[in-house]
Length: 320
Ligand SMILES: *Cc1c(COP(=O)(O)O)cnc(C)c1O
Image 1 (cartoon, rainbow, N blue to C red):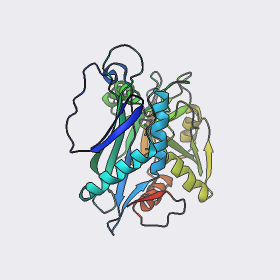
Image 2: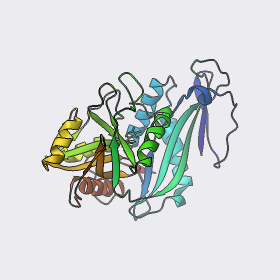
Image 3: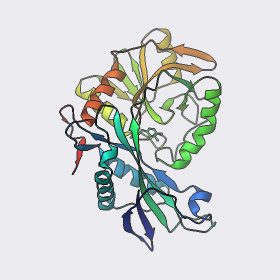
Image 4: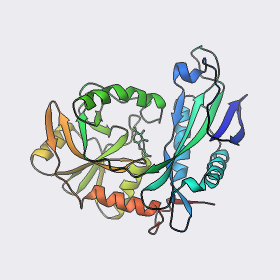
């Protein structure tokens, strides 16, 4: 694991050491006030043993954006990349080649200063952990559209990858699971009328041949997979609309057969097709779409990530 501490106004002593427990004061602010942000990225290995990252600068920029919102000091870019790349070289054997195999990378920052006064910590720990991952088939994702609970609100922390955003999602997601669903589609917190994200994924709707997704705001996480799907779609002259999308629009499109696909986008699962969604007790089913946008973007993104195709956008990053 990679570890670097913030003290007396600077980040210093970046260190790589074997994975193991930390010794932290039980009064550390992270435990009491939740000052914690994280990132999720992956390393891929091609058939020649080369290690690749996918748009890692975007992850670096985003963790600092999240940190800013949580009053955590920014982490220096050279420490981030040097730490990450050195650790990838050391753990090279944990990255298996072959489509679907990857190394999941979890950078995060926690407030370590001891003291239960409600003020931002003056000490932090930045860390990176690795975990080998395999592609998993998410199966048919069944979602419930939120009528009561919210993931984020205007002016809140929804756009930050803050640990607490996940904690707040667990309870409503458990309620959905008790009813046989997997995830909640979050709606706007004012009216619960507009569709925003699916669980911990950005969400896309395909009506006829138009792709629609919620616009980035302070309620929506600016996903790198989302951004990449939009770029691929635009390149292929698929019409993409980043705009508010209402529940009634989706239900109407379901009823008249124009809603072709709904899918989530996130680094861990790449693209996750939704098979059913529920609203006010009614369940709407989406027919399978094996040749659809979801399958196509998943294939295209994966091929870029594993160095199996040309990288016309310059998204791949070689670890040397
Ligand atoms: C991380 C995350 C995403 C997806 O971001 P990617 O960069 O595509 O992995 C979407 N929504 C939420 C709430 C997230 O935390």
